[in-house]
Image (cartoon, rainbow, N blue to C red; front, side, top):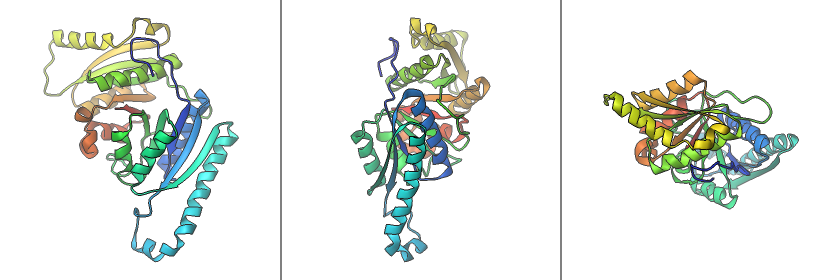
Length: 292
């Protein structure tokens, strides 16, 4: 992806979709397929089996049946692959085993040269369990690739190719957020979307008119002069708690994508359970793209 300031060329040639066969993963898979249809992407449907995880007393009694359990998961993965192939997608099912699962998944992301990672979460209070425990946290924190997370409030997309029409991009003016802006703008220009460049001043900040004007000017500097030829940019300065402000804006404009420039210190990816990012991921009614 090029930096902000030139017309971005959206490159989503290869999507990696991680699944644990949950309902959340099913919806995430629908988004991966819809994006694959939009961009002609190859899609890897990946399941990581970590034999050291999810062990209960009953699992212990069934330990000799690990082979059968793996076969069942492989069969479910092949069903997903066949669905993708039936849509005309270039799809590949990858069942891998590793401990920790996060290390194996991150390795596959690099080996497969993924341009976009798609995950689903069913946690309603934040990501404390996605894929296999800490796997999601490791992916969100450690990968340099954009991650599209589909939370529990998201409905499946309509059948067919997916285009985003109203995008909310939240920034703290950090370099990481600027990188995320390029992705947000790329998606907006791809589908002639409306894009809302937004900054949230903390609830303890009393903004003067001059300060608000200054923030708006900073936001406008993120918008290339020629972008209005391909999309409709807006600037929004909000006041309050970041999570509530971002979600309120997304709800008000009917956003179908939120983009976060997830700087670790700002969005607390180092401590996912307490950060802005996991709360937005868990509560948003649309997918959330995070870029570190």
